[in-house]
Image: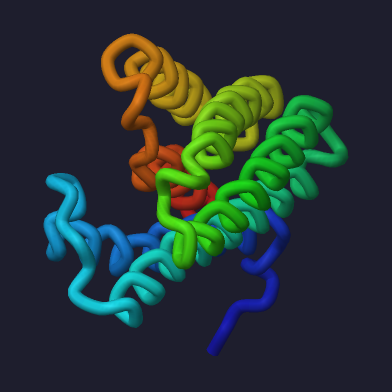
Length: 186
């Protein structure tokens, strides 16, 4: 039997954030299986569409989860920063979903600038959400700090070491997964 009292906005946000990672994993596995890190081509168009669809679905679920997280913070500290972070991620998500969809026909080289805007926006948005979590006390402080440090480290690392190769979708879903688990366990 499902305990309906357990399911509030925080738990629902947590579930969706965890689900985003679950949905992302097949896309990442397909990318690795085809040797995508080494520039390997997908074996078929259907394979490529399926792989990228998992990535797009994960971005959409993460955006929904972050918006719900903002809703859970509406009555307390952190609500302004959470709203800014979720809104920024939402708009960045729109860009990357559009870029991923366009890449299916045009290729990634034609949409790399849209993807770069998403990468920067997603990292910065999650930094702001991490600070909002610190302000709100909704989850343990270390989760807020981990979110801030994880996203800043990736952003700075890409800027310094890999400015022309910055799109690794798992990097944008790790902190939301951690937040989601914390919300579910709350």
